Image 1: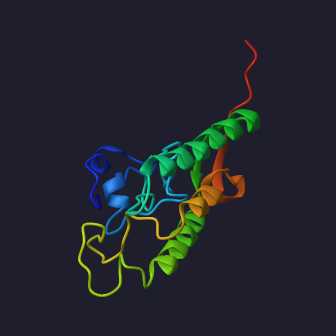
Image 2: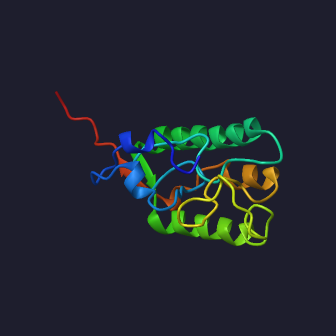
Length: 154
């Protein structure tokens, strides 16, 4: 799960693949969108995995985020959106802080959730209702937005 097979086949706006962007550790804003990859929504994404309840609940939460993004894009005339690098870094740092001391990372446990960098980039470390609260609605301030060009007269 730390090395998804789709990652080498997805290319971002700067020519890097998702595998390159995720080396050595997968990170995504709201576990759904990746900086440098406009209009890419990954479900389930990094740190959306779950080891203690239903993944369907997590996916439904992410889909609320996707629908919220698409509604915003339509209403605001946005043709592309991607998370700001700082928003993604802050989101991942908050997850890493919550992950510290959990059964998933403490006590010398080695598992398939730990990536090459030693980070748990797969699981969500908190209650699922908190995940849903965090990701359900898009905050456009956390995204780089490309506005559609106004229609030209013909």
